[in-house]
Length: 335
Image (cartoon, rainbow, N blue to C red; front, side):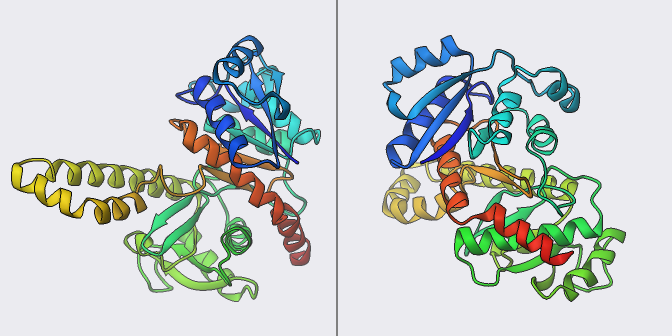
């Protein structure tokens, strides 16, 4: 039985959607138990209202909430009774194998580093979401945790990302690329130029060279390596363009009588194709922080029940494949 702690108080749809997500996950897996972290009276009421099976859920009281407007480091240190801090401590103390939150990204990243802690040998933990592509999905690492990364950090990101994609997604020798402004090895900023030869020399990384942003949607690269500033820009632009295109296509297909008829004829095939590039439909519901001693999953702030359920369920495959142990072994081997 895998125990997952869920932050009920985090995200745009805190409360009911979080508990709904927990219920969905419990219905899909019998090998799962969930600790609902947050205000006890609220959670108890939602458990009754939503008829959540009580044999596999428990409530862990946390009466404070860390908001997006607060300074993450200070909030994590001062709000000991917040749902994020309490949930992280459950993982640290071994009472839960994983923690899922749609709350403050900064607080989750800080809490992961300060409370759960990094695996021995890991210089920096990295936030790693999957992006929908023409060929399936690609892992983007890092997208938020390390804005001022160094070359040795990026090499570790590549190794951790490769382990994750191989074990969780079953990709043999995942192809690794570094985000650059051109295909030539001599191009890029100082960080890219310094990292490129290190990735090239690494025997346990299937490095294929530079990847330009326009090439990412094709899916030719399984692990996309960059520092967090670049990664976050890619992620947000990816989400924005995808959302806009989906909206424009739907609008165009309902503008007139003829287009509505055409839309009916291609509805099934079109829906399948469009769904493939809908970031809310793809991926696993959240981004893992790779490199920590325990599993921390950051779900999108606007996640609803379906995405929360996916985020919880992805903890099962992560645990079954022993990702944390494999990353630790890889780091020790590199020393």
